[in-house]
Image (cartoon, rainbow over all chains, first blue to last red; front, side, top):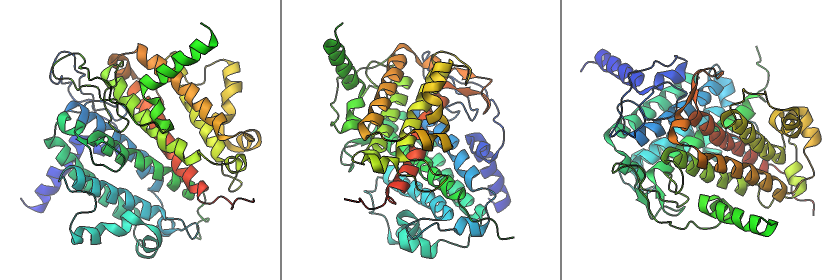
Amino acid sequence: MDSFNKLNKRRDFIRATGLMSVAGFSGIMLPSITIGNENSIPADDRPNVIGPRTGFSPQVGTLLSMMNWMRGPVLRTAKGLSVEQLDFIFDAESNSIGSMLLHLAATERYYQLNTFDGLPWGSWDKSIKEQWDTAMNLGDEGRKKIKGHNFDYYSNILTETRLKTIEEFKKRDDEWLMKVDEKWPWGPTNNYCKWFHVCEHESNHNGQMKWIKSRLPAAKK
Amino acid sequence: MDSFNKLNKRRDFIRATGLMSVAGFSGIMLPSITIGNENSIPADDRPNVIGPRTGFSPQVGTLLSMMNWMRGPVLRTAKGLSVEQLDFIFDAESNSIGSMLLHLAATERYYQLNTFDGLPWGSWDKSIKEQWDTAMNLGDEGRKKIKGHNFDYYSNILTETRLKTIEEFKKRDDEWLMKVDEKWPWGPTNNYCKWFHVCEHESNHNGQMKWIKSRLPAAKK
């Protein structure tokens, strides 16, 4: 497949999954489907309707609807900021807005490896750690290394990472989502809880990004 | 019912809904039930298992499992802080940790009035506004008025407010949860989305509370 077709196919895929809506497109009501049986809830793909999604298992689609919804406010916080603003570090312990965006992608990547590939936390290849550990751990190294990128850089990495999640969600059913990892450090934890955490974790950092955004030095121009 | 019985009944209710787990109690596996039909997911009331909950409609229970899970990290952030630390204001624009805790309760109260009582946003009685508007709006008035309370004060208000939500959730089904408010300012929005927002909003402020907590002046004793 040439890269133009690949891009178009990817665009169709993004549209179908509702990820477009986070970039400001209004939601389109797709045909309702009922899944499984007479008691099930029909899919409604509008962005502010949390629930099953066309083409996904009911609970997986419901989770995805939350994750896509959550991505909206996160991107809106950072959109329009300059490289200098994305790099701004409030104090010696603070992370830049840019580094927090990359941290969200790193988190999603590591939960993919854990829940889709069944890898115990941190057991992934060195090459993966080299790519993501700085953003995952933030701190001094993050402050030193994550800088000089514009909004699109972060937004594209977040979207690419999310598309991988969506592709994998598409292959999985609610039974997988409910599967409990009895050895997880928090205690027995199902995949739904892990991915709910990935979702609420975006809100956690969005709270911090908004806090910093409202304290950015006035633009120097 | 005398107040002792009322308290005991309330305790049983809290235990049954899993709200105890946020206060540090380990989860107890209640008997599995299947809801509705052969395709449905059995309830598993352990705190890190997101999904249906005993005694609630499947999707309502799933939402509640997320809300209870989310309350854990929020309370853990603030537990153990002194009144002085809960009142600490970082800068002229900042809200105290205490005021943010009360803000979460106010938000939950207003979404109750909107989604349970069907009241358009802000159309509630003056007495309710007098009780909650300061915490809802924060800012200068919040900085002036919300102070001098210990952790238990905030924790009790959060729990009382959550118990009201749980009581109402118990009466409602998934059809109610999926009901779309076509006139909501964000665009058509279902009750699931409104309550998911109440939930992720706790994480948003928890991110800010943790940011401030790590910058509290060293205890003066």
